[in-house]
Amino acid sequence: MAARAFTKGLLGFRHVGAAKVKFSINGQHFATASSIKSPEIQIQSFTEKVPNPPLEKHDHFRLSELFTLKDLFDARVHLGHKKGCRHRLMEPYLYNSSLDYDILDLDKTEEHLRLALNVTAQTAYRGGIILFVSRRRQFCHLVETTAKECGEYAHTRYWQGGLLTNAHIQYGQGVRLPDLIIFLSTLNNVFQQHVAIRDAAKMNIPTIGVVDSNCNPSSITYPVPGNDDTPVAMELYCRLFKMSINRAKDKRRQMELLQGLSEPSSSSS
Amino acid sequence: MAALCKLRFGVRSAVRFSPSISIRTSFSSDCDDGARPGSGFAAAFQRQAELQREADGDQSGSIPGQEQTFASLFKEAPIRDNVVVGRIFHVVRDDLYIDYGGKFHCVCRRPAAGGERLQRGSRVRLKILDPELTARFLGAKTDTTLLEAQGILLGPLEGREVQKRGQNQKQE
Image 1 (cartoon, rainbow over the protein chains, first blue to last red):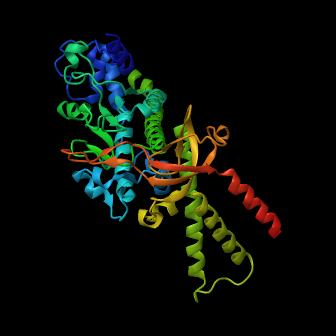
Image 2: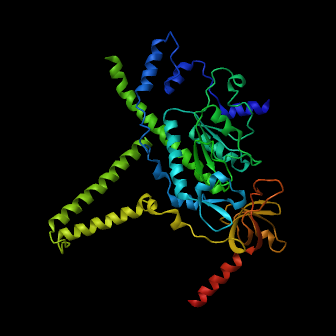
Image 3: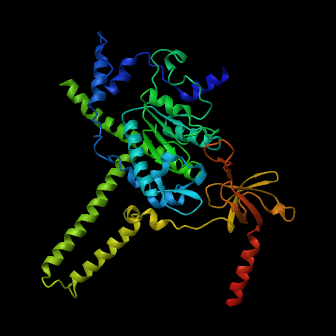
């Protein structure tokens, strides 16, 4: 009981009673409401008027200047587990080395990380809910403070079975699920894959995950091959995700201000 | 506001690069034989433009960083049975958690002799026996890891530093 209240507080699911305004951002679902009050029409058209950055443009928020390959190297992102712990599906991301422990190829990591940061920023720009998940007890506090500092959500405790799949019964009707889930460690402490990866795939929620050499990258939408055991590496990831979300949100606020300056003149005419 | 400033800065830096490049091309087109202007304002301006470009190139870390590949940064160095320098980042009574720059930390027992000097932040010498403790158990598909390294604590780093300083003074 206490655990459930705790996770609820941490998750902070927004109960959308007046679901109309929220769903208009996504654009597609909302069509059936017959009587729309006039102030709500204005709100919808206002949010729709803010132009969304094109998704084909690869680095609209210039997130590639947030990190270099040298930063990844210094944060020990390339270090993997021993050869015996290797997951078969991680072999494309490994670098050929004769050491007894695996080395992840940072050229590929850099590319994947850039993609992942871009997706994060685009989601945050469009007002999406981002959930940070990690079951590593060593980094639980770090992940929670990261989420707090960028105004998003984190879940670093025991994952209840029906959290995503049974949300409408456990938390009431009209609960809004996260639009993006970021796994800072895809395994839970008993070296099994985190349940949320499978559940997010079931609920069509895109996922970003830091996959180490002993993890399974297959169900994750945007895997980022990298070290998830060293504190330096985890701090780097948290910092990068936080900076990209903050950048996107600042840009959004700036665009809304600009639109707000031009909006009253157009509505009055 | 921060985003606005960033955008403005980006535009400014782009503007800074382009005029220097355009002026350079115009200079080279004027000197038909391809030789640099020997003296005068033209030569001085070219020299200053080059210096500024080099200075900007050093500051903008992204451009030279992108040219580096992982292969150039990574050197294979076996870590087993090596003596390394580590730093203690956590202490639980007699157990010292030491970070030596590898993937995992090493946990060593506090030595009886001179153990009180070793606190959080002190640097120690370690001999790494195994960078990650793993073992394959019967019936398992993959190894089981302990997420720790194994090493022997050789002693604090202070002794070596004092010796080095003494040697330097003798040389001087």
